[in-house]
Image (tube, rainbow, N blue to C red; front, side):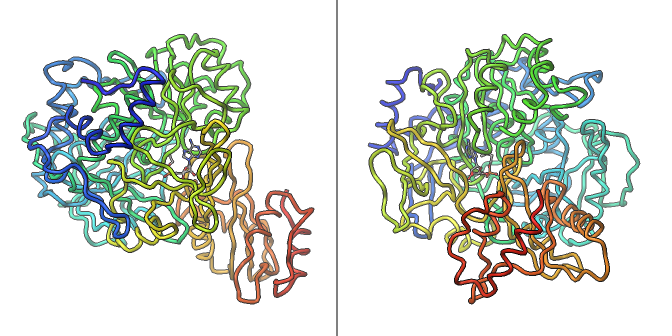
Length: 632
Ligand code: WT7
């Protein structure tokens, strides 16, 4: 049974029902899953704690809804089709039966290594099918996975291992990305020097590069699964048991572990997948995200596989070996739904339309966008050149914390408007708040985006620090979940996301805290103080502009800024490397010592005509010096 909505009036009808009686609405959706034991109560909640529970006392294992559920109906259908980095290398297909068997085998490996319900397992792997197998095997044995994007540095990896006290790390020897071969195991080795909880590391062999193996701790994946039983009894989980932890950046320094639980996440990821993409059985679906981000979790692995879809997984990058690679893959597998980020669209747009010309792209039915606001120009380019003006674009707004898509058109059903995420999905009750903390009702308003009622896929806590969850999301507006985004509701009631209103920047769809980048910069021994802001960037959406006070020690600015960039790469990863570093004599501080970021943002944007009121600055002259040294 599918809960797919088919018409616009159907959407409005479902939305009304979901608001009038949320419990019955979600109970109906949840009833289409296999539960080992049905829930006693649909929902218990308050946003003060916060304390949110869905499908109370329901027992399940999410992997039974992906594997056993499809074994006898679509066992021979491809679940995952993997396209390697090199177009010449063979692709791989895992049918639902093969996926079942691989997950069972690896579940048996995990249990043999002593992994038990509640243990934390870090997955630091490239985009290979085994990464999805690893996630599902964790879920099957009741272990809590925490996938760390394989582009993060050893420091960042060690922080995450330590924060969740992981017992096991699943990784690979190396990673092929474009024309690069990136060491992966070596990064893990470095991270493990600063951790103490990991007893087992399992390494999938991908590149064949030399790695060091520590006896008793490190095991090869292919050796570990040898002779393992291809059947395994899924561990019974409670609805509110943790399914995974995923670290994400906020406005304070340290990334936080967003916790999602089994029952609600399962229901929400499948429901939103089927409805937003209007998935029909037989469709081939491709999301280009990395499994290290929430998009990969919900819309490469869990959502599509719960729906019995064929999900493409791509190891490489959009421009290798040529700028038409995405479109080549779309034609090769006859992709029906294609889901990517605006930054990728803009990067490909810069190559012109020539790379698209050899490809038909006639299998495409739906195009998706996620991760950052899509500018109108990119929207039109995507619509015209990729969708040939016949594919609806679903601009999907959501967050790591929301677990699944919150505001989006339903493909082909909701009339679209460029740059608008349009309307909330059923079950999602939005509120726009003004600066005084009052809800702004009616249309044609602009303010901060909140959600006033729980939905099954929402964050339950931040791992190990519930108070942080409360402070970050449930304190700005009483009784509401605050998203951190600014939003406009236009005269039609359509939502347009305006971007973050906090100290979070979005670089190529990657979320970063300015404080986190500052902390990394400050690790350089000659840095005295720094301040980081975002600025509009043609391709990345936002670029990183760093103002740094340095003890120059007769060093050239050039060599120092390069070293600072290396420091950030080492502490966080290449994605956080500042685009521009300006060495400054001082920062614009108020008498109370607070940095006036507004000024720094204006300079970074090149918008220096009206700097506003600077009378409260301790040293107003510093502003002129900063403007003088501005980096173009
Ligand atoms: C932030 C969440 C959700 C998966 C990827 C990012 C921004 C996300 C959109 C969109 C405008 C968007 C928001 C949000 N964002 N999608 N369609 N339009 N902005 O997840 O790393 O948790 O980042 O990404 O600012 O708060 P994330």
